[in-house]
Structures are given as C-alpha cells and as structure tokens.
Image (tube, rainbow, N blue to C red; front, side, top):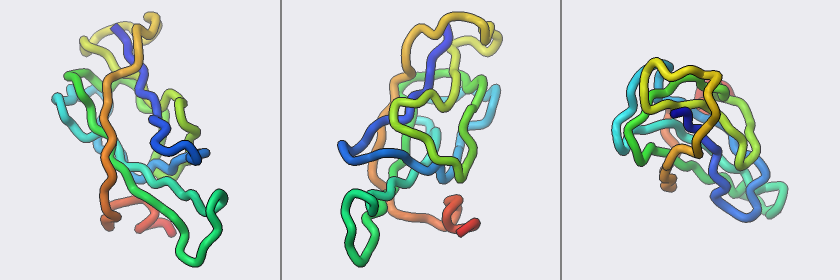
Length: 122
C-alpha cells in the first residue's frame, strides 16, 4: 500500500512551514518512531513583535514504512496538509497504486540546532 506523508498543521495561524532537515533517505525502511524531518514555523506575519515568533518541530513516524519518493527539499516552504512524500509498507510497491491513507506521524516542539537549513543558508 502507498501512504502520503502530510505536512501537519501545528498551529491555527500556520500558513506555511520551512523544511529544515530531512532525516529519512529514499528507499530506506523507517522504524517506528524514526525521525522524518524538522520544520520551522514563522508566525511573524500574524503576530508582529520585536523577536519573531519562530518555532521548530520534529516529525516522526508512528509506523514502520519505506520512504519511496520525497517531494520536499530542505529550505522549501510548504503549506499545511500538503503531501511532501510517498511511503509504502513494501519496498517494491508500485508508485502508481492508489494512496491508501496518510502515514501516521507525531510532531513535537524542539530547539534550534546547527544542522538545520536556516543555520547553513541564512
């Protein structure tokens, strides 16, 4: 079966998120709890203040799947609910198959770390 990796909407004011780092590699099996990617969310357009309200989040997988086709790249901005990758439960599943459902994921707030895209390309 094919599964879509959907960018979660983590805040009602979130308009987009920047992909900071992608941990998963194409055609690799990802473990339960495996790191997928880190994102940053900048809410400064919604809340003007001296210190921009930027938060960082890590998204992890809640099931064992294979990353087949990543669609996002570090540094890109994506809207919530966009499909940013395709995953499958078998390494040879046809990419022409119908997507069964979104992959089960979980997101948590994290602190900035230097491996992020914004730290190397700002």
